[in-house]
Length: 291
Image 1 (cartoon, rainbow, N blue to C red):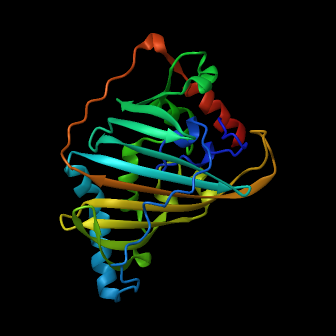
Image 2 (cartoon, one colour):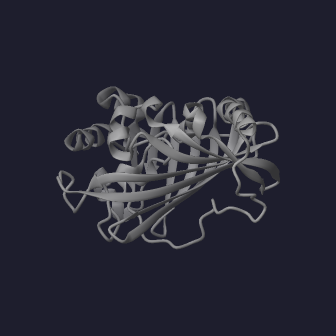
């Protein structure tokens, strides 16, 4: 698993709401403003139990309504803090919400990384200094289906399309309406919820790392689609340089994803096989060592 220049492990934080770049690239510190910061329009006060019940229905249906839109443009930021250091990954691109096909440009430590997901296979074109980990070839490949088969599920590598399904696994009693906000050109309703980790793919392993629930915030537009999703985690990860370190410490992360331009065209093709190194087994082995 790769690290940032300060030795901070970022791989363990790539679960379903966190793009695969956090487990496959090296990242540096970044103090830019979080795109998930609330606007001044937010009311901040939880609503009545009746409003909460309506919100539960809206949140649960948001995943399907977002997927029904077919495709979207996506902007994301992941920030991870541990050992007094912060790393970040920014990305933008297009996503087919039905098939999971995506094409994104990621930025980490000032480097640009091209990422594609085609037929549930993830490809990343790494910067030259990182290509020694891929045998000198420019692209790495991770078969998400095979990885799931080998490990039951892998909390380190994730399909960018999977994040919208989190909304289906909320705790009904922990839904509150925050207020209304403008996200881009869309009017949205802002909700705070908690996700039942046990209901997620690989939930039993993930629960050991993050606990029984995850706090999540959703901004849902007038058509019931997710416009912004924010997931905050406190995670237990091995301390120090060694991947097998028995010493544990806490790491926190925040992932914010925004959707816009629903129905946009998505065109992503796999790179040439001769330019690609398959990293699926290596990542599976690394995950097995930590289990």
